[in-house]
Length: 192
Image 1: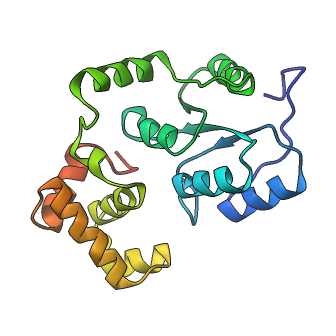
Image 2 (image 1 turned 135 degrees about the vertical axis):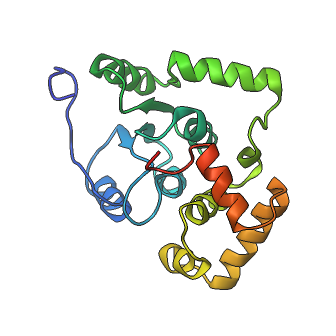
């Protein structure tokens, strides 16, 4: 980005709080947002950014699987999604497209979206879940207890248990073992 004559990296942030603070202090046109960040998830931060800074364009840049996370990011208000493995030229192209007021999706993601339209909107069981339910699903899938999840998300154990119950009902699963198996099979965990 720094090599482009008409682009400047104004600031970098390592957490959601840093991101919001930087946006309050600087004039930013586009935010490159990672979904995986310490503290609040990028999808939650995306909602906060859309509420507080509705004029800012947001391009999600992530190492996580496009077919799983891009639709959620776009539904949450992102203006584009690009995988970190993409060539640097593709990133510049994506930034320019988002800056011009358009949406950016890779050719691979465009194909996935078209397939989804043909097959119906809920291609995967986890497509039925809200963003928070999806986040809880992934945490249970990675072996975290309800108490650990509650502490991490700063929510009550009762609230997390309610999310777990909804996940089981919506997905037709019976227990945490089935959630873990599903997450592993669908490659929903960060380390896969």
